[in-house]
Length: 503
Image (cartoon, rainbow, N blue to C red; front, side, top):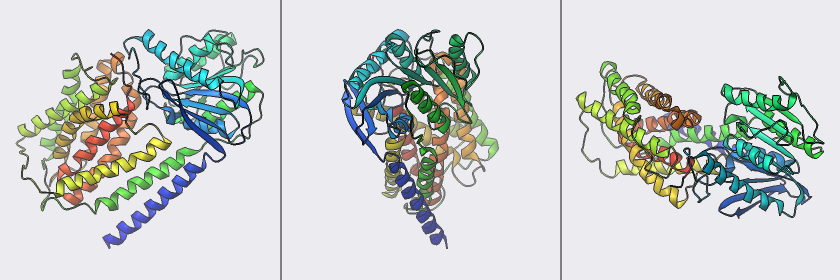
């Protein structure tokens, strides 16, 4: 009967995938999407198929994001008659121009980001479908950039700042400012939203109350989207409705009110892709006749798992780790590498000796099959979520970072596998890794602050690819079967996500 269960799971998974893809594609019905460039910045123009003239909204993504991440806003606005222009900032997505200044030089970084936004806005002003009016919208890092741009260009009719922080806001500029934040975001971000509205309100500001007047550009408002954090705020229907209503008021328009609802369909898509991995793992070749691994009991397992979590941040605390042109990517690669080496030393100290017998073609075949599924898993991510396909420069970064992720996953997979192995060993080891990253951030918050943003993403990756590795091990009985795919997945994510910086 196991074969029937696998077949049923595959059919359910395929049904979920097909349904989700159909619904995600349907979101852009009635929209024309044009792909071009403004200087080195890849640009997407989303406009109504009617061709009617309309205001243009230029949309900027946050740190380590890409223009795909802002699709919920862009599609919502285009479906409601606006022209939405998204783009990749320098060092982000598929923009091959490095980000100048990095985290160390705020002035150089902001100047580079502003110059990129300026070139895109100038391009947007030339669109024949535009009616001459323009607004800007930015998330996180870009919230400050769009605010600065709107302050310098008072002809910008409205500014929408999502998860904002910006010292450039004054009591009168930018014109018609809306601040949106997630209810679950850190306190300082929500405080900033309230602060910038209070500047114009002449005292304490109340959430979801509009102050000032759109006609003279003094309108201001802030709103917290319920039950969402720094990334989910981009998918919140409340965030989208606030932005659409604000722009309608600024441009005196009456939109149909269509809102992008991709979040549940993305959930169904990835639920289907994860579920499909279970029956596919059963098709992998059997690598070992007996389960291979460390086979440690809890008493011997815990010291090996805990020591790297504590020692790795301490070892890297004062060491220079900026050897790659990838902002924070090089630190994460070092963290993985040192963590893996310490785990390997711990295994040797616990008396574990790796089995070096080469299992023939079956192990590389299983590893390559899992890697191929990871790439298939990531392609919808590139289309519907954020940038996944690496540029040539990022492909080289991927190979360098994979040295670190490979060391970690090779040691970790050996640690948590075998028979007997502690129940929950995989969960315990991954929690140790997350705790280690949080400890590293606490030791050096100024340098590693932005890692806080991706900790939830790392957790999601560890859960999903941990499942794949567990299914692969159950079939192949060899811990190295899942190492290549896991190492590739994490190195790929780091290489394509974190900004490429100029030296």
